[in-house]
Length: 331
Ligand code: GDP
Ligand code: MN
Image 1 (cartoon, rainbow, N blue to C red):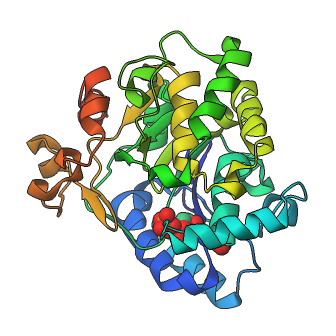
Image 2: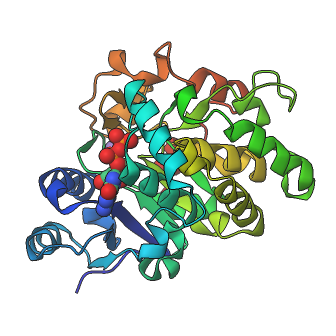
């Protein structure tokens, strides 16, 4: 019998049946680079029923138990409060203006699901930590320490690899709605927050600078989303209907919430992880990580130093590279 991962954690993928090949691609890499040593279980969720093929091949490739479930309709549908005439116009306009995924209803359901509902699903409810894995991603370095143990021991609650600016057309009123929430609920904001990461002036009078953690990779503590602060924030946003009348993404929402409700110390940049999700990839910059991680990524192409990257802003408030590599050497 294999020893199942010892932390209260799971690898989690939201995925469609037709993405099977791309799902296997990501699973194979996580298994080879990480999970063959730690055997954390996999949870797969879908708004439709998984096909026997999807279940058979993903089960075969995993080194740990795999679980599958269908998301209930109430967590994956357009709420009755949405005016369908107005919504139709929004979809048409965004399509005309080439807003990315602007004409898609399923993408909106997906973003809302990741913002407010994934951590409530029965299969995920039992876990504290999750690693969000997307189809067709590359993990180009070994992760030879237990990343979930790292999170717990170092009191980390949100971990990311890349940060980029959001498309402003998708979130015209997200910041104002957030500001209203914060003014009405100042008790939820922590003192050592990361407002400085998401506003250039470190002030509510400033606008959102659009920087967000790229949520196709996330390792985080679901108790953060289950907290009163996050729950109230999500309910406030959901009532404003911006997931539908605009196209609010889970990435700016997770990021703004983490920046306001967590301390900067509770957020971790995994600078030792090589990761690619088209069109961007990042690679560990230091030699120690690159060598001991047996990386295959190109450091000269790392997105961290791209002019489009928000990492310089993050490094401006959190010292670069603290933690994980030291942790790896000493365990
Ligand atoms: P992008 O990374 O923003 O281009 O969006 P993706 O198409 O990769 O979607 C993000 C994640 O949600 C991926 O894990 C997808 O497999 C998943 N996803 C997106 N739309 C749907 C959907 O309609 N149904 C299901 N089951 N998963 C979806
Ligand atoms: Mn994706």
